[in-house]
Image (cartoon, rainbow, N blue to C red; front, side, top):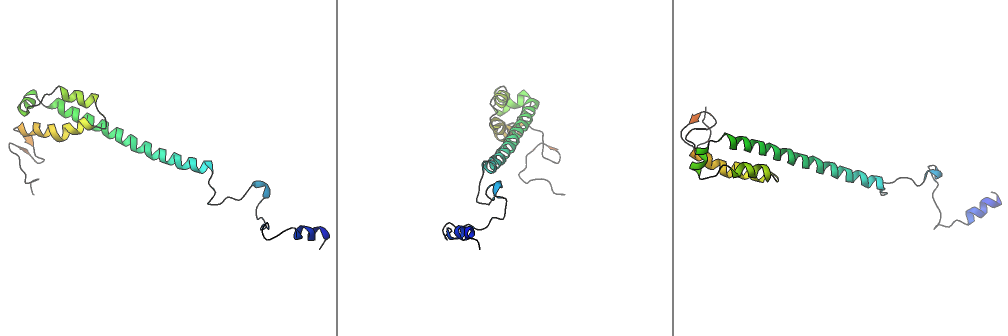
Length: 142
């Protein structure tokens, strides 16, 4: 062993001894799972943003579909049916169109007002045939 090799080995202690490198020292430190980079964090952020956009578009599309279905149902109901139910026809299309925040007016119409309008209609579709009465028995058995 040469004198220079002994001097370099003598200067090493257990505290500052490093294991031999199994990669190119000019390439920087090896990547480990514990090392998080800005690019890794950006990937997670982009993933959350993509999920948010998908959910947001689904809510928007669902809201528009509910608005269109409610407007078609409002438009096809005759004025006499609205009067018998004790409701005004004019505010509901305006509410559904102008205040369509998360389809809340459309849902209010569909689950509240529409049921009142169906109750005063003598002829309604029960799912199997046109009938003059309502039934709580459910769909007809075959």
